[in-house]
Image 1 (cartoon, rainbow, N blue to C red):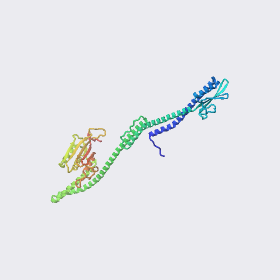
Image 2 (cartoon, one colour):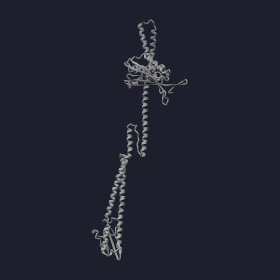
Image 3 (cartoon, helix red, strand yellow):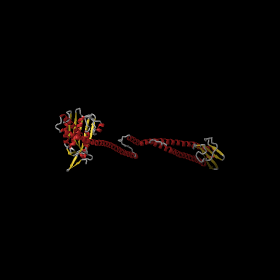
Length: 491
């Protein structure tokens, strides 16, 4: 069975109407009974009092001595006592008022209550004893004026109760809507929050303590919900980022392991080629054409050995690198000197090296290799166009040792080349991945950079945009000296 639902205002109004529909009829009949009884008693009291006064007038006066006086006194009872019938019965002779109603033929005994007989007349019969007279006074009073007053009073009371009911319903409607306004406000804001707008505040201005407390409790729940949702979103974002990094690292580790095995096997093949070729070239009697061919073979083998060396550099573990305190300014300067000889005149090289750079823990040779590879990658991104290659060093958060702050030295290399799309950025550190055409690159440059950065315990980030260039940022943890002991800042 479906339960009927209605609004708070309608609910309150219906209850007020229902209560008044029960109470007002009971009030009407109760007050009507009181009004009716009071008017009837007042009428009966007035009739009996007036009849007693007329009876005493007959007893103490001389009205019984003259028929004319008897008729005049009876007429007076009709005129001033609201009687319809007045009669004196004395010694078998009945004397009636000439002003009374002629329709009343037979008198009755005294009525015991108002409305008795159903004829609209209230009869009173009183004995009169005076100077040998043993008479009987009979009076009949009209009940109609009393009944009209009773009906008028009931109509007025009914009208007043109707007005009261209307005013009560109006007040109930106004109050119910004023009381339901904060509830509607809470409802509207709750629906807005349910759509995802968690910044809305459940603030309700009301003098009702229960509604105010309810709004405060709901606002507390909203804040906790917002905190939980934000924390969940942040946790989900961190989880996705960590999963992405884990997948990337696992892919690199898998490729690195495979590349390391291939490199060792390939190196085993190159050693006898280089060894035997060098031995043959030591023969002075070797002809010029054959010598030239063997020198080309030896050169190609050595270039292949350099590729193997790069692969091994990519797969080198941290403990294999010879880490020591180095000044990156010296490394960058030396790297720029080597790279400047290779860079074409169309490339402008700019440097932004801070004066005070803390020492970092790294391998100087690998750090130099890192700088040259990053500069070479930037140059290749601008190949065929005029461009600017910027390289810089600075110290980040070195002056702020607050909680959560980790001082680091930032090395960045940027270019204003073509930039990369997100799909390319996802794969740039994979071995043998290259966007260049066949024969123009091995795809090991950035993978070697990644391996070197990992061996230093540093981190690398890429900022790029299509048509605006690319920036590589490498963060080295700052090293502080404690006596003769060297400790990393994050230790």
